[in-house]
Length: 103
Length: 473
Image 1 (cartoon, rainbow over the protein chains, first blue to last red):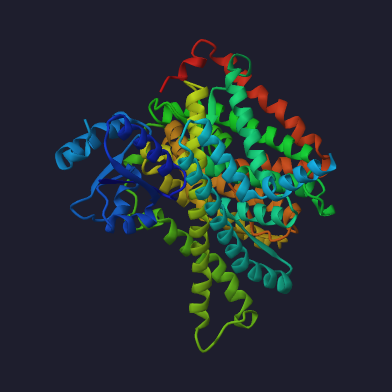
Image 2: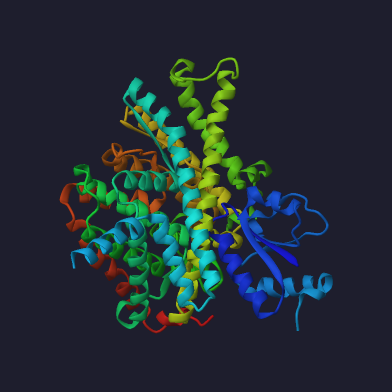
C-alpha cells in the first residue's frame, strides 16, 4: 500500500487540511493508501521509515533535505487544490504502483 | 424522583464534567451523525480521549519545567516572566481551569461557538456571514484561553466554577469572532491566493486585514518579497523542534544565568551549569511536542467530524483554515515576517526591562513565525517587501506590549505560564479582557452585536459580488 505524508511547519493545522483533501481525492479515485500528517521536524523520521509521496508547501520544500529514491516530494503552491496535487499523485501511482488502484 | 435526579447529576459531574470523556463523546456522536460505522466511531472516541490525556501530560510538563524558573525570578527580582506563544496561553488556560473545576466547559464553549457559526451561515442572507471555521486546534485553544481570561477577570478568584451563563456568553462571543473575522479576510485571502476559495481561520484575521489595507500605503507591491534571496541558514527555523529549542535556550537561558546556579537544585556531579540550562530549555521543545501530539490526535478526530458536518449542512460555505496554507503563495514572506517581527519584539522586551515592568515577556516561536509570517504574506501582496518588513516589525512591538498589559491582570492565575501573543489576541482580546476587568460582563455581551456590524458594512461595499466568492466544492 502506498504511504502518503502531509507536512507543514508545526504539524498541527495545515498538514491536517492537506491530509483531509488528499483523503477525499484518493477515495474518489479508488487509490489504496495510508495518509499521515506531521511537522517538518518530524518528517525525516517518517520518511526514513518509508514514505512514497510527501506533500508540503513550496515554502518548506528546501527544509526536507535529501530524501530516499522511493520518496516523491510534491512541493505545492495551493495546498487546498486537488487540481494541483491530484494529477501528480495519479501520475506517480500509475507509474509506480498500478496495483494500488482498484477498478 | 430524587433518585433519578441524583443519577442524572452524577452523570453530569462524572461523565460530561470530565473533559476527556466529553470530547470523546462529541467525536463519537459526530461520527455517528456522519453515518460512520460504530467501530469507527468507537476508535474516534478512544483517540480523542487518549489524545486529550497526552495533551495534559504536555501541559503539565511545561508548567513543571517553567514554573520553578518563574517563581525564583519572582522571588529574587519581583518580576513575572511569561511566554507569548499560543501553546503557553493554552497551557495557562487549561491548567487554571482544571484547578478551578471548569476545564470541561471548554468543550461546551467550542460546541456553542461552532453551532453559532453554522447558524450564522445558514442565515447568511441576514447575517452576511459566508465562512465556516474548521481549524480544530485553534478552536480548542481559543475557547480555552477566552474562557479562562474572561472567567478570571470576572470573579474566578471566589473559587467557584464558571457559571453556565458565562460559558454560554463566551461560546456565543467566540463563535461570533470566528464567523466575523474569517469572513472579513475573505477578499484579501482571495487576492493573496489567486482565488483559491478559502479564507483564514486562525489568530490574526483582523491583524492580516489591517496588514493588507495598510500595506499599500507603505510600499510598492511590484517590489515583491519573493524576488529577494533570503539567507539559507534561516531555513533551520522552519523546523519547529529546532526553533523552539533555540528560542527557549536564548531567552530562558539568559534568565537562568541571571538567577545563577545557586537558584537551581541540580546534581553538580552530573551537569555543568551550561548543560543543565540546555537540558531544561530543550525540555520546552519536548513538552510542546508532546502537547502537540495530543492535540493533533484529538483534533484530527474532531476536525474530520466538523468538516463532515459542514459538507453535509452547508454546501458552498467558504472554509476557514490554518494561516500557513497561504505560505505557499509567498514562500519568502514568512521568513521576512519572522526576522522583522523578532526585531520588533526584542525592542519591546528591552523597553519592558528598561521600564522595570512587573511583567517580562519571553518571545515564542509560533507567534514569531506564524503570526508575523502571515502578516508579511498579506502586507507583501499590497505593498511589497517594504510593507512586509514594516508591518511585522510594528506587530512585534504590539504583540509584546499588548500581551504584557493583559498579563498584568492574569499573572496571579494558578499555573500561569503565558498568553497567546498572536496579534488579534494582543489587541482585540487583550483589550476586551482588560475592559471586562473594569466594567464586568457587559463587555463580552456587547462585543457580540458590535462585531456583527462588520459583515454588514462589508456587504454594503460590494453587494453584487458579495456572495459570488462562495462556491461549491
